Image (cartoon, rainbow, N blue to C red; front, side, top):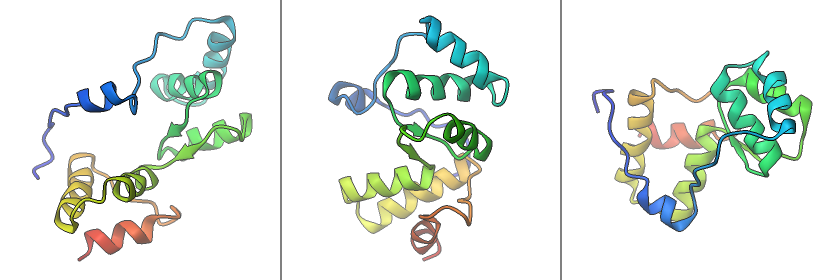
Length: 131
């Protein structure tokens, strides 16, 4: 992997309901919460946090500040990091070891990503990518 952008086909995830496209935030409650969150984190992160809180979704982020702001607001939103999300994917889809390693390495290179040592699943990630 060279780190360049790679298109991702999400059609199978959209059709199965694993990924949903949401309407814009529009209710008074959503917009008020958006204003609150956007004072602390960037717009996209704030919008995702509002959708998680107001629409009952989970939240996936590696942004420590965003996680802190969200947890200060509520503890009822399920939260995952990239590592946790990929560990769930690996558990659910059971890819072969080479595919799993290649997928994680592509995330590292293409996303300029390394798991935080504080991430509870960091040792799992490293055990696969360091082999």
